[in-house]
Amino acid sequence: MPELPEVEHLRRTLEPLLVGAHVIGVQLRRRDMLRGPRADRRLRHGCLLNGTRIAFLLRHGKHLAIVSDCGSAMGIHLGMSGRLWFQPQGERLAMADHVHCIWRLRSAHQHGRLIFRDPRRFGGLWSYDSIDSLRTDRWRRLGPDALQVSGPMLEAHLGSSARAIKNALLDQRALAGVGNIYADEALFTAAIHPLRLCNALSGGEWKRLAAAVRRVLAAAIKAGGSTIRDYRDGNGELGHYADRHRVYGRGGQPCLLCRGVLSRAVIGQRSSVFCRQCQPAVPAA
DNA sequence: AGGATAGCCTGCGGGC
DNA sequence: TGCCCGCAGGCTATCC
Image 1 (cartoon, rainbow, N blue to C red):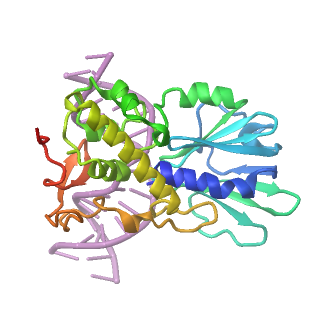
Image 2: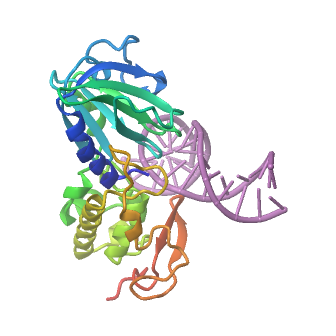
Image 3: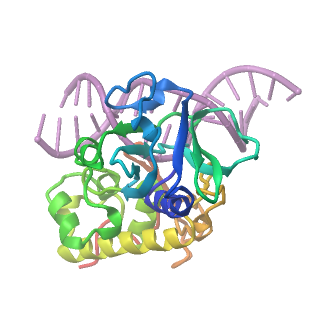
């Protein structure tokens, strides 16, 4: 369940390990994990960073990009169960099943491998000649990054929508980076019921919601993200934000604010947890 | 055209 | 012990 905080924490932990390293070999074990524009079969220079030197890592929403100093870029999406980690040379490959791609890296101070594993294969890799073409082809459809979102931005994108706010928050075209966990957490923090319709929210509520989204995401990044089952960072370490979830996964348990029982409902085919008292369906006048 | 729905995919835990 | 089922939810494709 990597959402924005997990991907951003991953970016931060991988950056010092990868930047400056030469990609001296790429082993793509499952060709169909390379998505988007068709790649040539031999992974020529630049394709999936092959033969390049890594310059920097970017993130937008839940999407990660690794950019080489010759300009080529690789897009990565972790889907539901994707993991990406660095392993120093000499260590045996743990969890070798479902490993779809391995990059051999060499730098002045360290040799090792970057490993992409994704059992459910909802994620994938994309290869581009430039970061601009990745942005144009892949990222153009995404809304503003959730870490930077403001009330007016949210209202501009969603204010006229007839959808429930919970569904709208998960729409990456409107807001990039929020998934089921942080949607529930942000709605609870903003005291907004998940079934409220977008076109019925006030300017003040949009502002409150945007602030809640930013605050929840920033706190989660600081804690290294939420490890529910699969997530690990670039060094294989767990994230600790799941200990601080106030509603996600806590249906039937007491609300931490009012001690009432937290409700669970399926909204847009996804489980949602919220507090009927703290997040009223009809806001107080 | 916006919005709802089905489908992709594997692992895990509960019930029997 | 082992099997079956439901659930987890990222996204895209398709339909209404």
